[in-house]
Length: 89
Image 1: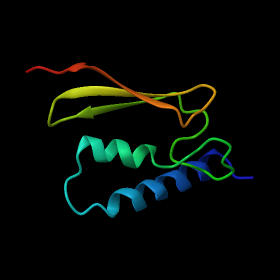
Image 2 (image 1 turned 120 degrees about the vertical axis):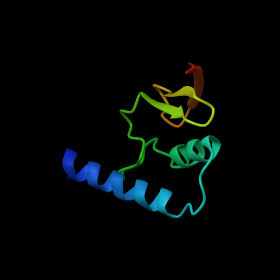
Image 3 (image 1 turned 90 degrees about the horizontal axis):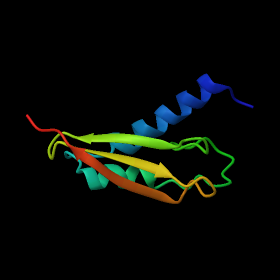
Image 4 (image 1 turned 180 degrees about the horizontal axis):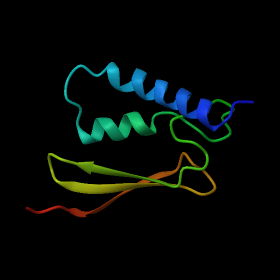
């Protein structure tokens, strides 16, 4: 059984593999696709989005918009993205 520190290490290595392969600037849509590609329901392996992840906030600097991802309580692979507003200068 691995502990929280080891779990975080595995998760960050997965982030590294996902995003280091992207040679060009990635769009918000591509970022969201990468972050939600892994299925976590009933998965015994450490995943980027764990069973306990409730939400993830993302700020898109290009459009200056903030979005929040919510995972379903019963099914963590049931994901909903909600636009919560824009930042104005």
